[in-house]
Length: 337
Image 1 (spheres, rainbow, N blue to C red):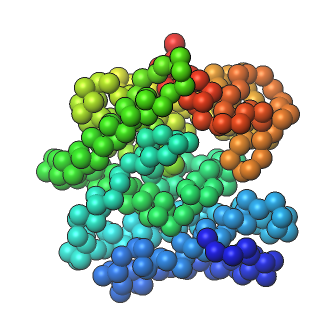
Image 2: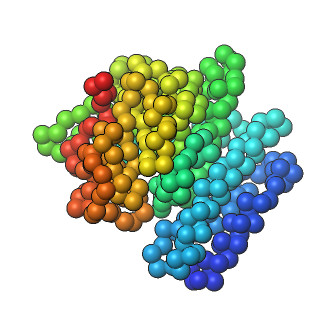
């Protein structure tokens, strides 16, 4: 997003981040409730992107990169929460056109993630390792459009959780065209599978953020996918959230993620879920069915410490880092419990 930044630019963006995290902007949001989030937060969203570039940089001063990495989650979630508050204020003041929430894609579509849903990072229950290490801070997932989409999706999910039957019906009806498109796209992906490799169509929830933070909404959405696809498209979730046990196991293929500093969360794992593991620093675990080596911060660790099966898409020698290219479907079928 623009030219390469100098060390002075890096210092400036760090100073902005520290200042931004201290600001209380409720009055500003009330005063500017007629302005859309893209316009109101243009500068902040661009600065967040620059902060992420600094956090991921291998050429920047190490101390500055580390400082940025410690701030990116806090900055991202503050922006998301403020956008959510802005949308709530606009709804209360009748300055929000409801179609704004649904006019762009609710689901996402990419070669790496396939058909997927993003939620705000503010819906997460992060660990000390995943907060800054999350690929939500990488490249396209850190762009202004991606952050705004996640915040809007979170607003929709929260509105469903807090709404009565009428509100919930309106939301699901508004999402139906989006779900139909997602179902269609997930089926289309099957046409590009490597020769000899077969799998069912699926939608990935939520490749950024935590739809499990909104369990009733999540289950309703999964039911809609099942209905619109006539049970031909699976709903696959990756989660670290304690609400995972509130998800209907009949509707979901569940992958519960642990990492070296969150082993106590094993108590949160539903009995129908698969345990997967974020192997930060190359530390793998035999309690997990799949270990994901750190591969989103432009580094692919060749050395590992520990036991357990490693996701082939995250191995350092892998060139095409997609599940289909690796002919791997492990995470997308229900585990044998």
